[in-house]
Length: 496
Image: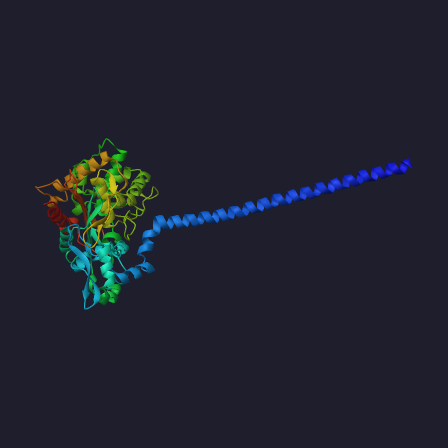
């Protein structure tokens, strides 16, 4: 009997142990399931967080970087609705002269451009799409800040409201003079106020009459020989020619602060099999840096290029916005600089004097010179001074903005002295004035398909710059023939 009881107790104990083990296994399984569920939930949360972060990033991108493009997009239905209810506002120059307005002809609205071709590429057009200031200020021109009383009256009489007006930074007289001086030549003129970034004029030729745009549209598109719709000031890429010597001189001064350059020019020199000639083979003799800069001595600057750290020169070009977007609110082409330390002496020699593969737009050249004129600080270029309602009340002012400090002020003072010497005794003597001092640089950009393009870049007054001018004349054969005299007349009309 006792044996039976002992066996029964043992069986109960075993049974209890089995039950405890089963409970332990169940708990362990539950715990494992819970951990697995937690891991799965964590993964799901992570996925949702990533998706949410991407949505926030995309929203932020569009708000910060693409909102303006979305607003002025031709396919934005909001603009079409506004056009049905609001008469497009006027565009004025800085002095109040009308550059674009909407008028009523027999009950139909027509956009009229009083100065026709002269402002075509910068004011733009509002049919066949939109360009220029017409595109940049599209929404503003279709917003109305009329008084509540006027809005009620117009609503009751079934009239469209007047849109806001744009007062541009452009100077009508300067623009018209630049347009006249460029004549029948292909090319571009850009003028900027260096202390603010205000664009004072921007001319491109060949051009078109925006009043006749619809009528001539097919012809303009097919005219590939002249490309009249191309804005050469912002989208035309050209070799910089000797205007690039400004950058070569800056890099030399950065690497050689003592500025002890001496060179004997014999009119030509050989660089790894590439013979570099000075203009017309002139032998300039013994030269310092400022003397070589003034006469634009090719062999002297090719020699300087041999001794430069090309990696550092690349940093300088990037600093001055080569291979980078420009801080400009309308379409533009990006300038390019391709020289590396792997290139041979011949390629270096060509590049540092502004030939080779380097390409630049007239606008970009103007911005580089604006940086020098403004003590190394580049102001963001802009085109709208302020917005007014139809009664002339200012609704919004546009203020100057700094893009960045691109050069040391001490370097810009030395380069300014060099550019002054170009006008006093060098290749831009035709630009000299008795009334104010001009700092400038000329350039002849070799063109494999024809005569060289002519450049002039400069600013005045040199001691207190109020205007920067960049001129590019295609196939002019040289800078002094057309670009330099043009610059002198433009400085005169603006400063006198």
